[in-house]
Length: 223
Image (cartoon, rainbow, N blue to C red; front, top):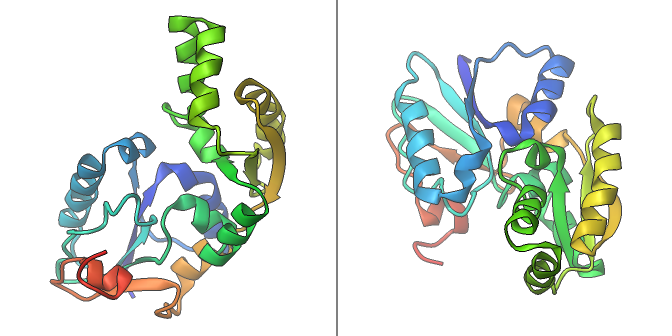
């Protein structure tokens, strides 16, 4: 089948690793990770990518729901397939159930290498707050913001830069007053996205000329 991938740069390292492992030659259209901060802008950007695609059978979205940014996306004369996950955190943990179980153990603020490499991440914001208001005030603000969290869950997916990433997160955890814990990640979900089959429990399949709705994702028209 003729296939194109539309993917978030947050999972660039993991996606490229899967592509190399399975010897896949699908074209990839990248979405900048910073757009996640604005659901409307993210949706608009993804739709523009979809509108630019032609002469394919299917488009694979390497995304989660991302604050329901996928709601309202319209397919053209091809299927659109994306993981049944809230965001890239769940995608890299392998399942929603595993994420829930990890969070049940301890309230966890998750961090991935891709998020740390993006322009806007919690550590960059913390350092900016320190620069603007001083460390004491910044620490008070982030103590309130992160008050419910017990640990910084560092998701390791064994990329080429993983060792450096893990080292940096020790300092991040210290700054944010959280306990750093490395949590093994996985690229298995991404591999399933690229290879199929796409079962209903793990993927949403949008037929040609359909619009993504709440019902596609949650099984009902409203949440």
